[in-house]
Image (cartoon, rainbow, N blue to C red; front, side):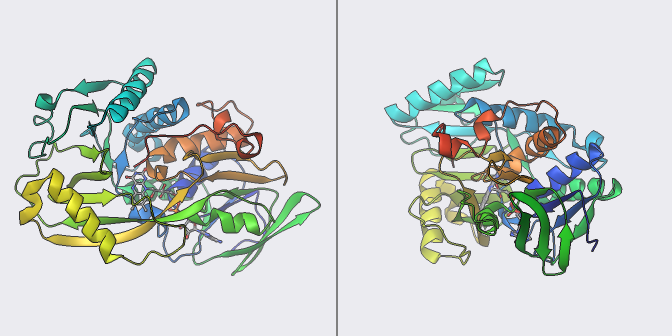
Length: 382
Ligand SMILES: Cc1cc2nc3c(=O)[nH]c(=O)nc-3n(C[C@H](O)[C@H](O)[C@H](O)COP(=O)(O)OP(=O)(O)OC[C@H]3O[C@@H](n4cnc5c(N)ncnc54)[C@H](O)[C@@H]3O)c2cc1C
């Protein structure tokens, strides 16, 4: 591993890879990416459900998604690697007055930003998502440009393209300390030696708080466990089956390897780095899934896993310069939507670092917002 670099990226998940690729494309000198695990993507990226959607409640999240969706579609042209963005759509099932009011507000904002989102009456739902129980469902929102992707396909595409552009990758390399001179970054200490550098980009996802602690900083990103269950093959799951989110119960599901992927955000989970599987959590997912899709009675469990959401207090990413330490830049805290925002996140990070105007106005994602009290809450979190 080299001992000097123009920039060190900490973390080889989808965010670090996208940042590495986009910075390399800007010809930003010597870029080194360090990852503590043996393989890239071993953190949250390998646990993601693969959902890609622009149906958010804030302008910045909608715009980050709309740009990313374009970039997912252009991925081969950009990186040389084929990767599928399967635009089967995302559907949110709504039951209560409160949900309907909030999602109609989101719908108006999304439409005003050019997203082709639709309101569906219950009778319109089966043509997209047959075999879903419509019990209690009064309305749905649907965007046919949302969909699914395999995080590893995109991660590998970015890695290969970045390597071709000269980025150096060092796996099984954990950052253990960061040195400064006064208030300026000088050096990253890793388990494979020191790298002197004037610039660090924190792409450590759920571990970002620990990176901040190395500099005596509080980075407000909490690791929160989330679980997923997949089923074996199911005849009734059609290739066009979209991502369906039951807003009231919090269940989400989509087609996966001819079966289904089922997930749910247990809001009672407390922050920790524990990713063991909790059987009660699995049972809760299955119970909610059976209620919404009774035909799952015939399903067998194929796999289950747990991973970490990298959650900020307002469920928005942190992208920008650390105000108290020169040379420290954050691209982290995507709060469960880091795969879908990775293309835009890498691009705007590279633009900001090279002094360009970012393609999306991300002022509201700056780390200063927590001090300034200018947080804007994302309400549509799964
Ligand atoms: C169950 C589940 C379902 C999800 N579903 C979706 C979805 O459908 N759509 C979506 O967009 N997002 C989803 N997400 C969220 C998504 O996985 C994350 O937002 C995304 O992977 C974040 O990418 P990242 O690169 O920031 O983090 P990571 O992939 O975690 O990468 C960070 C890397 O930093 C490394 N690292 C940490 N500390 C150090 C250190 N000291 N030294 C060196 N390396 C270090 C870690 O090993 C890790 O590989 C889901 C997450 C979970 C858990």
